[in-house]
Length: 568
Image (cartoon, rainbow, N blue to C red; front, side, top):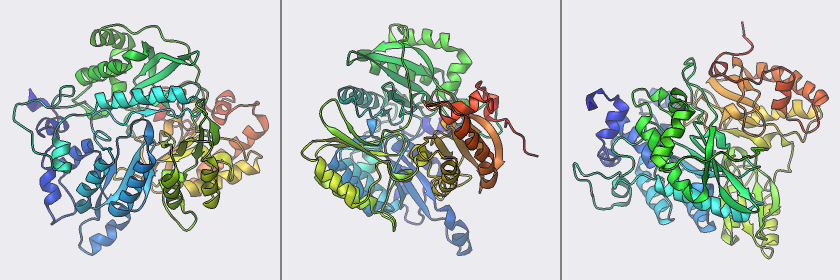
């Protein structure tokens, strides 16, 4: 039977619980790379091997191998860390990586351009901070994300603890991580199981969980395999509506692949949440498609079998059925910038971090500024799911000190310039991501400058529009929830998607395929001008496009592949 498994499943099965030959590959000084098989296993450890694509041709002409390096992504449930951990990560970025910290759309950190010789040192330094990178990538549960909820500090504390508990429950258990990175004694024995939940082939594909506290949907909760939507009554957390089957990855030209928003299936009390998530992950473990990785995500398991089937399976795996879903309302999916007061009497400051990149540049000493804040801050930091940063739980006594540092370094609390950029996100893409077909993070500022001129000229300098850009169709920056979504097709060419709502509850659809910047801007300009003159009070751009019939409200998988407007 095992011989019938595809290569990806056999690799996991024969990896000795994610050990492979990673240790030997790291010790090989003749190359900056590791083998392809070990690179696939390395993902479970939170790392990818990459190479600097800008330098490929130059190094080829010099008869050198590509400039290989590694990305490491941390497991950081809820995006919460202490000032001491921030300082430690900042030091690691300088010692082992490229001197920057990258805040991700899954509420954690990525280090980039780590040389193979420094990879083990980085992992050990992360471990000293009581952090790890287990399951930040790979066919397991990924980083559990939550809403930030600055106004509901007590609820956030409960939700954060649940996120940690889910993350710990679904974290892989093999001794491989400790042996390879931390020098622990080998514990592997042939035939002895090390993964009580995952088994020796783990999940069919990655698995993502998010928690939102209405009315905020800053984590795009329905974009996840499991979306937990908090139900709060009289200030008390009662439990969660559970939505299942969200996910955004797709492949161009393959209509059997498509983005999907999670479907609300029912409600569970708060004290059952962790067990419920384990039961749902077990359903995907046992019924997910292992024969075709392009069809292996939980969204396809749900669509293939139906929601009623899932509800029946949940009752069996969980030991009790889902309750009827409670009413809820999600209003917006961006961050609340600037100062806010929590219900615990503490203040919170959310800063805009362009592209999620914490770096010192000629224009900004952002990394230095945040290092100085971390050196004096007595509260915590929270990474948002929109690549921004909250300095949380600032006491009244310390607020003036934090404000002085913000002013000294001219940090952006969301008030510096047109509002358009505040809800704009991009993935890393070139030069390091091997999947990127076009620019994203490096190009987004230039694109925003040109689009901002159109928006400001139309008289809308304060208008928020969700803009999402990725270098490929895989959806890391959640482009299919952008009122304006761009996914890379080739250098300088993008697919343009339009018509998502502002609350993360309606996908956009493909409008134009494989077009350049000029075509995109010339397409958007009359729409924005019409929006400025004909919008209803409080209406958002995506809703306006639907109301005007520029894009319809219906969404089908085919609409993500077939452009509404054909280019001849």
